[in-house]
Image (cartoon, rainbow, N blue to C red; front, side, top):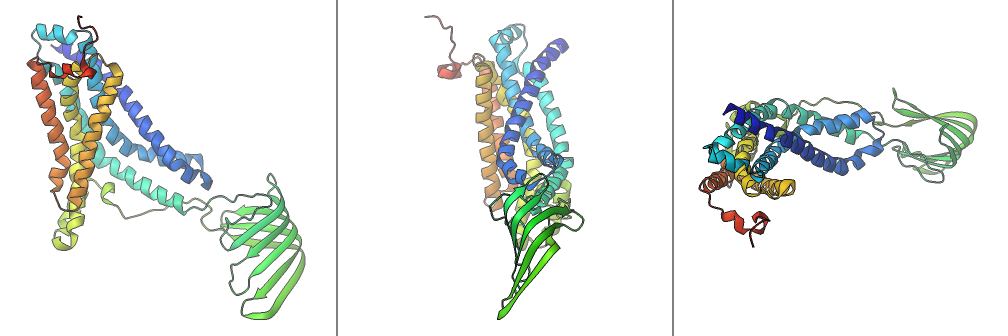
Length: 389
């Protein structure tokens, strides 16, 4: 029996890693498409961008593992059934539950590992990802120099230049509108200006040659001042042009472990009427850290009998069924979370009802399969291609 179990596990491992990698890549690519455009124009170091996506891998892994279990179970049992190995094993006295046993053991192991991951790794990664995203949003875009275009990237300043040498950061026939002092609006014009950035002061230094300074007084219409210069240094303040890592002591519910959230719940229960909604939100997150990992076991119960019946569909059917059941599972989870936050159902019921529902369906399918009732064969998806005419 050990040899059979080892053989069954070898059927599970390659599809699991394949499915896990595929699902992770799909979700990550979707995240990149959604967010890369918002952060790419800020002149960030590529390592900062890589760090952002790496930190977001934590919640992607938490979702990809259960879905990979479902897809791998479907593919493994589908292959075994397609080659009539399930029939041969059952003829030799090996029941379906004995075939599912090694997969359930793997599901339990993955469930335990995912619970530890959700309480030890995921909160810290979520916290660092949120803080990093705040730092990215706070950073201003890099200064973009374009000939003949007004440049509004610097606060309180507007730049215009007829010609620009991008390599030397040199501007020709330029005009600067200075609105840093609302009472004395100033316009500076020059034949040439060399632009450089001083990171320590977060300022741009503009060394001007052959120009004029025009200044007015917003309170005195008779005041007007014009100053000529051969050389002048203009300092343009540019806060948040340099990316800086910040620290944050605040943590949301998704940035805490279950014990940390439970401690917060006990504190909030001292004023339950005032904190009822927050208590429900914290309890939802506590149950979610355990209910999603438990899906690794539930999806084995679903995938095994469906794999036996969908053996002719191959990876296409396995992927389709995996997406279908995971969407159903996720819809129940999201809907339950919203109902629990509003106090319409208990947090425990909201988070565990998808597992109970799909687990019951899995047990039902296994019982029907062991009794050899082919009720799914009537569906076109499961009809045999080689039926006798």
